[in-house]
Image (cartoon, rainbow, N blue to C red; front, side, top):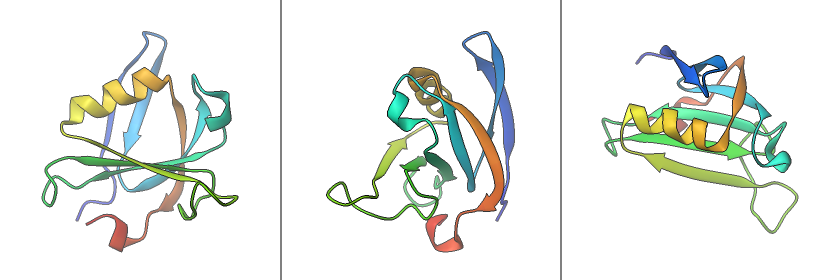
Length: 107
């Protein structure tokens, strides 16, 4: 299993944004101010579900429910290019940490 695959793309023609699979990132810019400071992780699960999972949460354990203090959202896209469009659409700027998701999350 490859823990990190990095690629770059043009982020609104302003910044080269890096995508790191299975690593935890922190959203530093978003069209939704409430998401700033939230955690994000992108998993390549193409072998199992045929696409990519995008997790976001207000805590780095990615646990909790919308009814409690912690919130988690899961998204799925089919193609790598869809990840780029997803990030562009939310205008995310992500700072990647050196922390990885647990292996049970990454398929």
